[in-house]
Image (cartoon, rainbow, N blue to C red; front, side, top):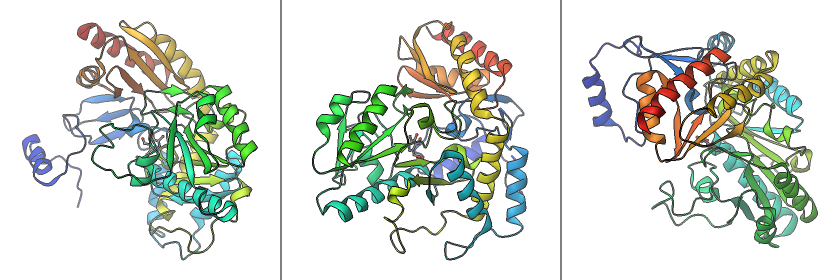
Length: 403
Ligand SMILES: Cc1ncc(COP(=O)(O)O)c(C=O)c1O
């Protein structure tokens, strides 16, 4: 049985969604039927240049051959075993990740939010075991985004935003401070603080890079008070910002780093990696998940990460990011073009991000709107200059029309 053949009318399809789905996303008006490298192809054969990449996931393009081959091969061998067993893809992937990014231990999860969730749990356990019951508070940044589970929503520094509304009461133990303001973080840390959790580029918050002084200041602050520096690299990780991990550009090593999105080549996998300082904090029974570290996801991730390493995609992200951002600065109505590598934000002088997104889709370009006046562009890391030019030209046409 092949489920992805479009053998019904668009109305019939929409009807199925309207009848059965909780629609928490506003979907594009076409079916994403095929993915080929940098393009999505719809049910009528129309091609869309994909600069949203499945929300910063498809960083080696759609259906990368090595990733597809790895998934197929693993499916024929072992699809799921659980964490009661040794499985080879899990072990090989753990070694590859830890060695590539200079961390000592790994814990696999199924998503970005889960990776952050376990990072929060680990920090609390470390605090209580080493300092007693009151040392569990974590300071995070205003405007951050760490996920949609209850703990990661509480960690997300967007009080009163739509994503948090009516989900209170939030779990206690989080305090927020202004991003890129080291004095504010100093002031927010108390004797109950065990960790600081930040992104290196606030993605959902409008593509705002952290400054080096800020991150190095946080490292120093954490060292002085034996607090843990937790870095959320769910979106920035695995080449997106021009380094394998964004923290490598900041001259620091986190105590714990979370990752997901790009590492799986489209399969649901996340992880947190820690330094040896935390190696003994988790033992048998401390945490668990039925699927986490599933062999097919690990095989896909192993192929995806090798693809990123072997083709030096972080370097391409660095070079193309600069080329692309220089192009985008020529667009009309620009407030600011900012970002790191191929994590690019375009801030307009007016609140036109949502109409720009939908008009771009009509013209064959896929992007996301992250703020009323900010669009985010996260093309695959192997994107070419021609594809960047194609995206620029569509944007130019659309913005001129909407200004
Ligand atoms: C920085 C960051 N952390 C966490 C998450 C949550 O990841 P997921 O949607 O896989 O749960 C996201 C998702 O966009 C993210 O950008």
